[in-house]
Image 1 (cartoon, rainbow, N blue to C red):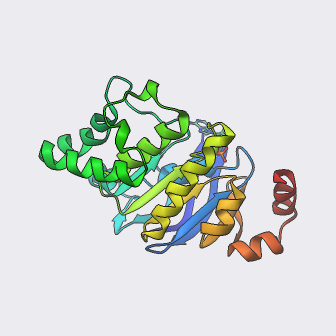
Image 2: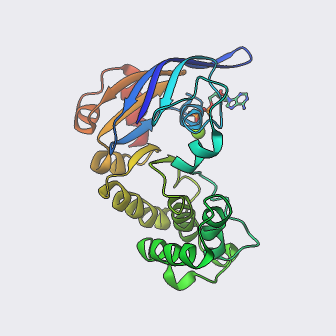
Length: 240
Ligand code: ADP
Ligand code: MG
């Protein structure tokens, strides 16, 4: 589904992605962790081309993102993105937030889009909030709507960049539970998170990044039991 080969990126003099080689299979859940500033967000943002790469090859569902001509609409319809900040449209109700892209971009008829939106709201446990506005929701509820909104485009890949980092502790679990449910449906997912409980339970593989490189790539049980690099050991110790 996703294939990085020798990918490099610079922000001026800063070598932010330094030779990334990474494959993600269909249906796989990959967790990306590492210290702040190590390049996790930049890495995940290249997958839907919020950040272009400077060198190497990046293929996402058969689309070659190394080419300037990539069809961004097609790419972004196939790759859903959930950010740390929920970014819901504040002037639109919950259901309008979800139906906007399908009706405008996919040209789904309104009634059909609303039915699909309601099914998604059921799935994230928020059907009763269909007519609420984002400011009337808790952070955890807003993030669950943001996940439903991304799913409304029927993506093949879902990217999550620290989706629970802005939440009060008591709301983290409800968002992780929705993500775990999604993983159970066979969705291909790349998740940047420091929630190591989630990583342990849900991830098929964990990569540890530092200074723009992938230092470690392992199954969760190996990573937690026996991290290879000192930086990874240090990182895990800090989380405890
Ligand atoms: P992480 O998500 O692991 O904290 P980021 O990918 O956000 O790391 O950032 C990696 C490095 O790139 C950091 O040093 C950050 O300051 C820098 N950086 C991120 N985005 C930009 C940008 N748009 N312009 C310049 N530097 C950036
Ligand atoms: Mg980040």
